[in-house]
Length: 400
Image (cartoon, rainbow, N blue to C red; front, top):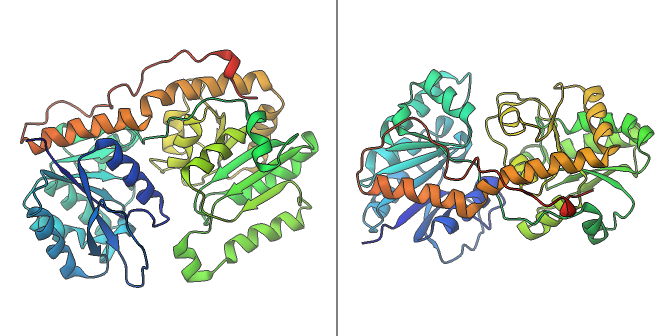
């Protein structure tokens, strides 16, 4: 009998990066059903593949959901793990689910902390003990998992963050979609909140615009819903004030809304340069950076763990963290060199071909099927099939 898979996570239409990831992952794996993490006050109409809900703040509901999944006929459950995704102290309610479940579980770890609190270490250690395998999205995360948490190498897999299969196009062909003709477009996207370093890019734009008067920095995305609940739009207002104080109106554009995948792809294709100015150098995965690679955009980034790994080999430009001056240098140098942008973008695009969702889904499906069959996992952490395949990208489709 063909195995059937359950996925426990947030899920669209919830506007959450992990929800979007789970939709794309589950769709690429196939033969799936979804148990969506739900919170009081949520008014969400889920699609038909969502067969169960788990009330995130209700501890008893984790055991009930485990019983439901165990009796549903699925062969294995894939859990998307992030500390803030589940209820309890550092999300420890998920351990109740794992204690109760009667089918094997695999955890995809979206965060691996270098310096966890005692509580966070306890949750991660028990999670590793109670799952058949753990998936991380970078070699840096796999090393950290083994070194800091004692993870068993034979039960750790590195499977890259999946990306959409976007065509590589000249940015000038997409700019008219957004009225950006004649502009040198720098892009960041994602749910807005402190800790991403956008204020450093805004400060850098004071210098960039002197060297490139046509430069425009686009900050694409709605404010994180948790931030809206705690302080409203105070953070975005601070960024807007910085724009006004620096005289950058006309050089910074806020697109204050959540965009779907099709529109996001067009924004990425309209960009000349993508920037990830993150100050947290321990960050072990970035979906936004992964998407930029998939669009073949040259990236300027701080040297956080994930960026240092995926941008090596000429696939991006690494600059000093927390430095508007370094960001200005990196951005201006790329905007002023079309040939270099094309070369870096083609290298990024070729690298991403092994990370499109069909490839990543096949790697997950192979792992989940192996776990469902009770087969012994062997060997060290492995990269998904095709993740490092090189592709020749025709120069004539290189973006500008």
